[in-house]
Image (tube, rainbow, N blue to C red):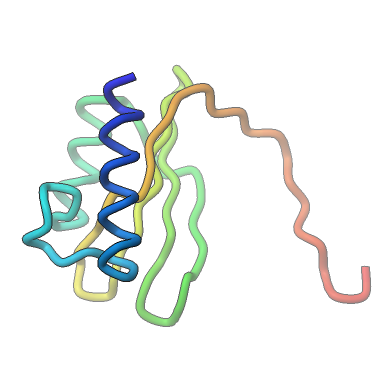
Length: 101
């Protein structure tokens, strides 16, 4: 429940500031390497996938075997912001729809 409340506040801050929030906004943003290290150490999460939001920002999803998950937005300057966190991750195989398929 605590992770959910924290994520809700962080996501709201990110939306209010227009995408990746500035580094001085609460504690939701930090160096990407520091966030990834903390996700591994505290929650045993590792990267499960990523995709481009725009040429300067990548969306990254980190998950653990226990089902916790974290979504980050990382920019080209090495800054990451937590967008959302949760529990109960399920990873069914997903096939992206290709044009003309």
